[in-house]
Structure formats: C-alpha cells, structure tokens
Image 1: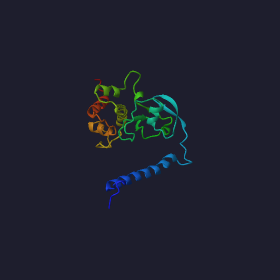
Image 2 (image 1 turned 90 degrees about the vertical axis):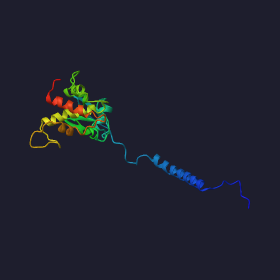
Image 3 (image 1 turned 45 degrees about the vertical axis):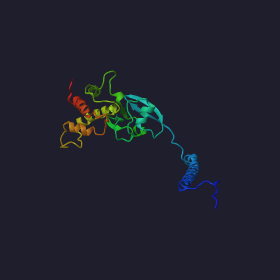
Image 4 (image 1 turned 90 degrees about the horizontal axis):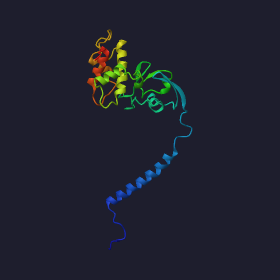
Length: 217
C-alpha cells in the first residue's frame, strides 16, 4: 500500500505540540474575559479623606486614600523622603519614625490613625544646621556605609536612649526590677529591629554608647 505523502507524518512529539498549543489557546481565550471584567459591581474605591498631620513641628493638611500608610504619606505627599521604604513589611526598620516620642515602623500603620499625633522623622531631629547628637555620633563613628538604613537606625537609637532613661527593660535585661545598664548586649537587643545589610553594627553600637555616656569626642 502506497503511503500518502500529502499528509504530515504524525509522531508522539507532534501530537504533544498540537495538544499544548490547543491548551494554550483555550487558556488565553478563557482568561481574557476575566481580565476585562474589572472589580465587582458595588465595590468602588474608597473615598479620599483630608486629615491633619503634625510632622517635625509643622502642621500639614493632606488629602489621601484612607489606606495610605504613614510612610507613604511622608514620602509621597509631604516629600519627606529621608524615611526609607525597605521591606514594606515591618521587618527591616528602615522606615522607623518617632510618634509622640516612641518609635514605630511607619510602613505598618495608617496615616489616618495618627491625626494630630506628634511625628518626628530624620529631617526633624537636627536643629537647623546643627546635627542632633545621635546624627553627629553616627558620622563620628562611621555608623553607616550605604546609608539606606541610617535614618531608621538613628530614629530608633534616639528612642532607645529615651526608653532606657525611663527604665524600660528589654529581653536582655538580667533583672527587670532594677534599672538596666546600657551594655552592648542591651543596645544590640533594643536595636534588633533595625537591620543593616552593610553590617555596620559595631560602629552603630559605639555611636549609641557615645551619646549615652555624653562623650564629647
């Protein structure tokens, strides 16, 4: 019997290729309507709100999506870009700011929750051209390399000294009934929420101890 040379020779490979192509066409054909459907009816985006923020001693009125974090309000609406967005999950500490004197991860809290709170960022620590003692200590002890985490490190360090001065214990405090000594272990524990990928930790600890001890050098 003579083979028909007009028909393509079907092999296992060509069968698989044809099947895969057909499946892809079917998948694309089904996915396109879902993409075009958009959000479900009756679920419009939230209305923007106008809130008052007190940042670095200055009053701001900002109109934002109520889901906006403090971090994004600072960077995107107030142009205070010293506060850095690192992980955006509260794990690296690069976005640390002070709210009513206490440190927070600004990427984890909504701006609408802090209306009229006293927010201090890295830009608000200096007194004009005069650096804050902690900023000066970081420079003096070379407590930074790339500098990306430094604003959060400095804000956190300022809060560490305030917490220690108030007698707050940490996980590393041997006796929580007494005022903890500001040892290297205490500083390392209290600063553990701020990650430095350049590993300038030894110099950061030295800068904090410098300010704590009032070393004028």
